[in-house]
Length: 232
Image (cartoon, rainbow, N blue to C red):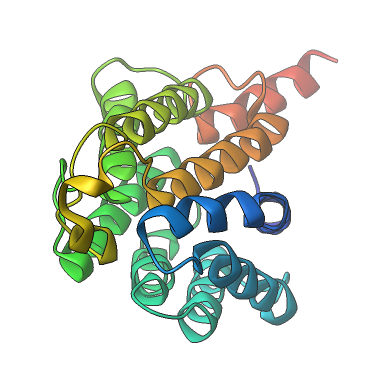
């Protein structure tokens, strides 16, 4: 995948995520009304709309992702701004040399670590970490251990994030505003884990448009296109 295509894919991913958050805004607010302050949907919507307005489609991959993170950081209120936007801005540095299979794994790991550092949450606290952690670990293992292509690995990450959301429903929240409810938080899926799943799902859908048919990886996909052209 050349640099122009990478930029095109990133712009498409931002458009898709912003649209999904817009469509799910009321649902996320409903989830947050049960155990939080009922602003998660509105907060994320405001942040991604700002990212759409401020993003530069001609910038390099790392700068584009960093810009999205900074827009979220400036517009998403409460703890979510640093968690979603600040972590994204820091992890964007892994794309400095472009998006490759290796840098996508490094980006995912850096994002997870920053979310954990900033929020102080671990798996089992009923937060977005319960969705991100299995998604990132599954993605990394699928590529580095099982030797799967990035698109297949990402589809497994989506499944893992979905299981993570379900995991938050029967457990007691130990972090964030939901923790104030104690055992009354049980029975509600975490809004942050849910929005994380939506974001990962949209990234997968966009990746499927750009990587469908890539046999071994993002870089290998470009090689496959070259081989096809040579055969023609």
